[in-house]
Length: 87
Image 1 (cartoon, rainbow, N blue to C red):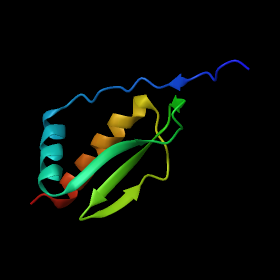
Image 2 (cartoon, one colour):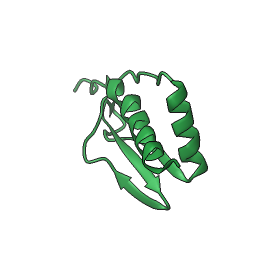
Image 3 (tube, rainbow, N blue to C red):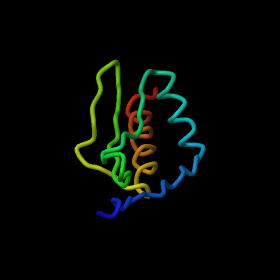
């Protein structure tokens, strides 16, 4: 039997705009953690969930994301929490 073929997703790095930096910094300083978790087995890292932890409560995205979508969605979530809570 031939070895299983691995599908790998190239993860696009974030662009780090000034707005992204401000949102990221605010979230980290206020206990909001957002990060990826592989949704596939060790042979296939093509799909990712996004975990969000706010005040000790963890939630996982219902949808999975590929490497091109992953960081864009993560920073969209950082900006969402920042915009929702900034004074």
